[in-house]
Amino acid sequence: MDIDREDGRTRNQLRPLACTRGVLHRAHGSASWSQGDTKVLAAVYGPKAGAKKNENPEKACIEVIWKPKTGQIGKLEKEYEMILKRTLQSIIILTVNPNTTTSVVVQVVNDDGALLVCAINAACAALVDAGIPMKHLAGEDEHVILDPTKLEVQKMKGFAYLVFPNSVRSVLPEGSLAKGEPVEHGIITSVTHGVMSVEGYFNCLDRGRAASARLSDFLRRSLQSQLPGDSSKAG
Image (cartoon, rainbow, N blue to C red; front, side, top):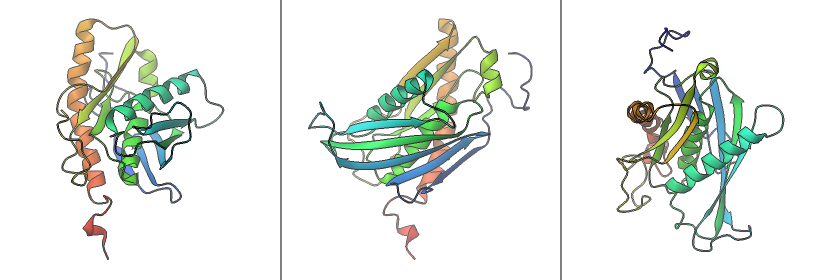
């Protein structure tokens, strides 16, 4: 992978980002997120009274529904559902709305690589749009070659999905964040595919954390002007 990338980007360059909130009027919160030609819609419904068996009455339940662009959900999509659910469970403050269920529906519009990346970022934006309290936002990126297209992924021996925590104290309303939560370091989710050395994995962490900061800055700018209760929307 030492040759130039076919779309002219450098190894550390992301594709153009776009985020729009409030795209679905019947959902409690919604957002679209795109990176290049990859685009995902996310919708949030709830919190609603808990109705699932074996729910914890002291915590909220998070449900993730993945809808592919065409056809039925398969093994890979079920894996994406599980990863996204566990990621959201770690960043949502589950004790604020106990004994409730919040459903996050992800609709794939187009897949040209980094699909799970787009889905996690779209879900975070939709949760903010719905006013769901969170500890921090999740900023995600992939391999040492950042934001790969589908063709680039097919040529790789291995790659990693990495989700890092980033503070949203400058974005979310006061009182909606958990006190004492470390948000500047650590990692939320790490999923690897294929083969890579230990040194290569840590290189991925360094590159991914730097790219995550850029993604988070973009997400903050996209969300800041349309927060629930934002007085700038008056009139």
